[in-house]
Image (cartoon, rainbow, N blue to C red; front, side, top):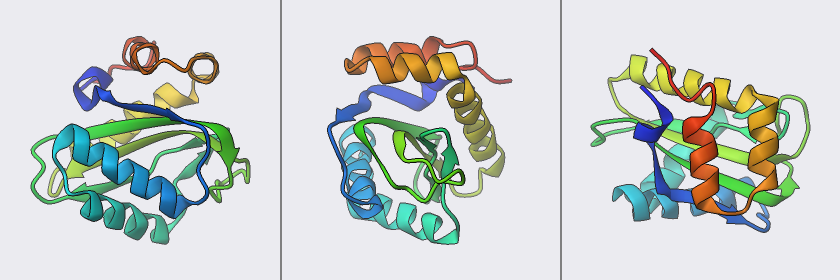
Length: 154
């Protein structure tokens, strides 16, 4: 599994600001609808339900919202870089500016966990995060994410 198979180039955006998690999840819903043909409202609701179980802000400005959805045949992702970090209730109480959202098929728990581990490893790398924060071009962001040192997993 590698990030190039999870993250389409069109599923990357840089936005100036976001006012709330609800608005963020709505934006992600639109991105998943546009890039993977998923229902925006279903995506938004799934992210909100998962977040109600506990915050997916993992620290150091990174959030990894994720959920499982019926009807998917593989893990898919979307990435947002937010120019104005916002409060996401992250574990370290720091505002979030890098968001990598994942959806996995129901019943594919191993793939879901592998994808989460892969994204987590990639975004734990401080050099990778610095490059992501220094670029605005979605094509460059895609390259950074998919060609980084941690972008592949067994």
